[in-house]
Length: 149
Image (cartoon, rainbow, N blue to C red; front, top):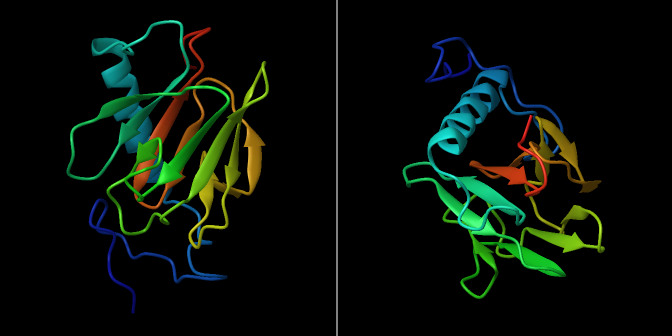
């Protein structure tokens, strides 16, 4: 028997595939997206018009992380551009690169992967409003050009 999901009290489906390869429960993703939208309405990015991530870490206050071209590195190591306080994130988990027009996220060989809107990706061009998950951390991408959808 599986442990119940603490948010819904429904049984969790059994894990399948490689570690970290299970999709995020839809309730958790929806909750993170609602929280991000509430925060966007009440707390604008620190540099309006510039790309950034709204970082939602479990047990910590939300924070904005500005993105500086041409590359931002994400993970647990303190010398990275965006440091995550989550043991499910790898030391160097992902890279965000800017090609002059678009930001792209690339998995840096992490164990638990990157999810965008609940689907695991190795590499993907981002659009404003994309909800990423690294470990238990949600990151909402805002390109600075248009409000996220």
